[in-house]
Length: 336
Image 1 (cartoon, rainbow, N blue to C red):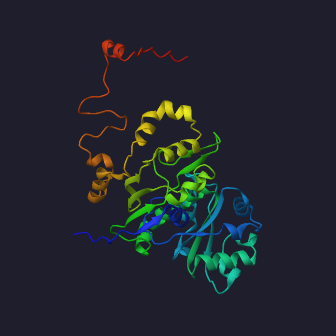
Image 2: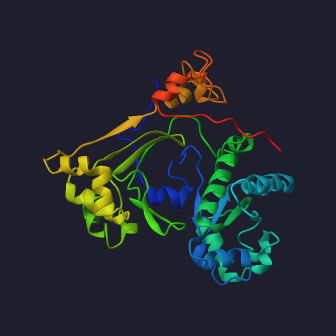
Image 3: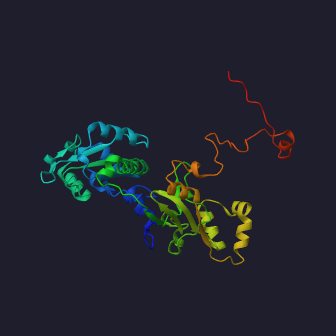
């Protein structure tokens, strides 16, 4: 038998990103981010102050209990690991003695931090003697991905388990209050985070056209041990709201009618409020069985090259089938 909390805990998307750098946090790992951006704006360490003063930048600390015993070679390995996510380095401070303040810290960056910053770091992180604090300072996405990945790597390592930094078992979680939109810098427009048919929260309808970035959606994910095993939303059931969402996405009335006229017309006839959720049962079974890959629990999995060993697909297509679909194949030009 598996004991699960009833009801499952619920966490807003914004909290997951702030504390864990993830919209599907793994709660088996019991340490988390500490926000330090505001403390780093005036330090002499440009890596920190640059990120803290940059629009969309973030500085966080990750205090690892007992981590002062982590060797320099292991820190170098972690530095290479976070580089996978685009991090340019990995700053750290070993806390030998909190009572001694600056003199009780071991790190090449301490000399570039003023006393108020050091005091703030130690206080906010709750660091104790024998801990290590890793830092992420970059654009928000890089910090979230890199330090979030580091948190899981350390927490689930043999050393992390030995020091009680992660637990076994099942940690389910509802993640709610996702943003409706995100801004596409390249195209200078708002785009839907999930899809344009998700309903905004009632109290955020007023922001649909005036401030789309402030809108939260009636969307929800079911997360288990850091994996999304289900997701869904309440759908828009009113034509006026659907049209507002299209306008927020810079989809004009003519384009909306051409692409989604059938939907807009149907919504005028009184569609009831409706929503749902789709579960990834194969992903759940993968976790329950301890399989290494989702392909291990699928009846007829494709190969890494997307081939089906049962039906030998994809296979040759004859000319008659191509003609029916108005497709003409051309031979690739030989390499020079």
